[in-house]
Length: 293
Image (cartoon, rainbow, N blue to C red):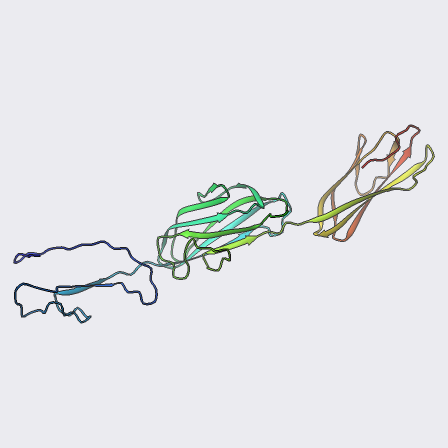
């Protein structure tokens, strides 16, 4: 190249900044390596690493870093089937730089449905919630929430809800966005799991006298047993009275009679325990004495 006396030329190029790491350098050195005329002030092509002559120079970049971490929690880890739970994702930035362009994805398993109230401008597509374009100041955090309805357990049904940081403008020194391999081993990925309560209920029905006389009063007994593993709450039982009985009395445990139906509601049956429900009825003269429940 030629440079007029008193003139200058500018040389430019573009490059992509790589991630910091052991042995990675950002000191970019340039020097004059040849001149067409003899000079006594400089020696071309002799940089020894310190850029001590004025025909050599360097510039250095310091890539921004934002140490992001993600924590996942759920409002109720042992809900009932049909309950609505709230999941909270907290993304924190330990700096030293502010984090921009942060994206987070949450992958919903098939144990949940009816995803609502997604905060922070998140969008649901299929079974994935995505938040993008988030900014988190150094030392700060953002909380992202949504609600989901808990489905019934069954073969192939999962309740492990995983979230991870999938993108950020800055380098994260101890984790790589969007690389969860299923174990949430890095601090920018986490999971929260629910274990829906289950109560194995059984009901047995008996009568104090299976061969009564017409006009006799008999006592019906309903025994509800809970084999667990959870306590059963909100239990409701109905007994449907046929026309062979009348004068229904002494209904236990707060049961109520409406027409020909007795209803018990709001019952609790602890694990390995029973709830016994009884009532009396007078045997009529007509056919159809068989009781149905």
